[in-house]
Image 1 (cartoon, rainbow, N blue to C red):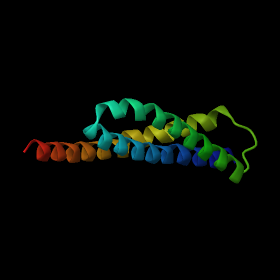
Image 2 (image 1 turned 180 degrees about the vertical axis):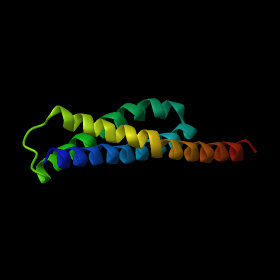
Image 3 (image 1 turned 135 degrees about the horizontal axis):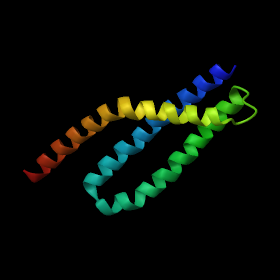
Length: 109
C-alpha cells in the first residue's frame, strides 16, 4: 500500500511541474511585454500554484483514501516535481527562450 501511495504522490508532484510550466510560459510572455507586470504577477502565480498543488494533493488523498499525511508522501511529491524540473522543464525552457528571442528580434526590425 505504501508503494502505491508513494507512486501516486510522485505523480502529483510530477503533474505539479506541468502546472508550474503553464505559469512559466505565461510569465515569459508577460515578461516580454512589461517587466513591471512580472513583479506584480509572480507573487500571485506563486500563491495560485501553492493553492492548486495543495488542492491536487488533498484531492488525491481523499480519492485514494490516504487518511494520514506521512513524510514520505511529501518527499515523493518533491521528488516528482524535481524529476519534472530536471527533464521536461529544461526542454520547455529552451523552447520558450527561442520563441521569446524570435519575438524580440521581430520587434527590433
